[in-house]
Image (cartoon, rainbow, N blue to C red):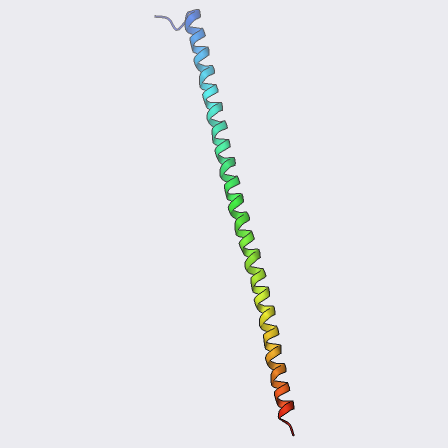
Length: 87
C-alpha cells in the first residue's frame, strides 16, 4: 500500500475539505446572527429600562413639586388663619 492517492481520491478529499470549510463558515455566520439578535434584544431591554427610569424620575419630580406646593399652601393657610385670628 502506498501513501499516494489516485486522482478520484484526491478530488474527493478536496471536495470534502471544501464542504468542511463551507459548513464551518455557515456555522460561524449563524452564530454571528444569533449574537446580533441577542444584542438587539438586550438593547431593547436596556432601552425599556431607560424609559422606566426616565418615567420614574419624572414621577418623582412631579411628586416632589406637588408636595412642595402643598406644603406652601398649608403654610399660607396657617398664616392666613393666624392673621384672621388677630383682633
